[in-house]
Length: 120
Image (cartoon, rainbow, N blue to C red; front, side):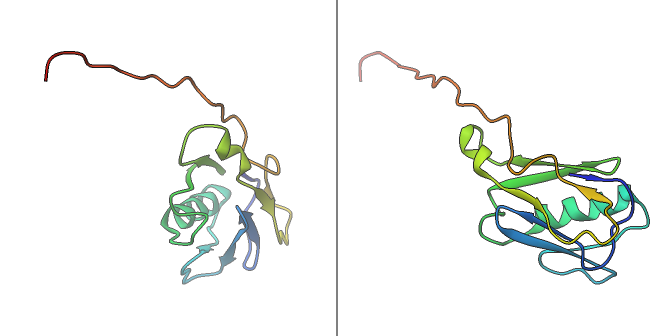
């Protein structure tokens, strides 16, 4: 998700069906404080995602912000992460954009099994 400018209060982003809402100050729960720049807005959103205790977020996704871009990653590897949905909700100043409707890039790898032989 990319911020091209400062978000504004009441902007929303929806991740895996959970709404995150921007507020002017005093963010709690699934809210983030609007920052003074795109970089600060993104950092605040990423922090809110990582701090969320909401089912379908906690243990399911993590977020990292760099230079106004929030990268959301499935917490568990594999194709199941590709089921996580992303959506732009309210965007009063059109300063936010999501990269697609779902997370992408997860693939199922090869399972490695180790056998340990020897006498018991």
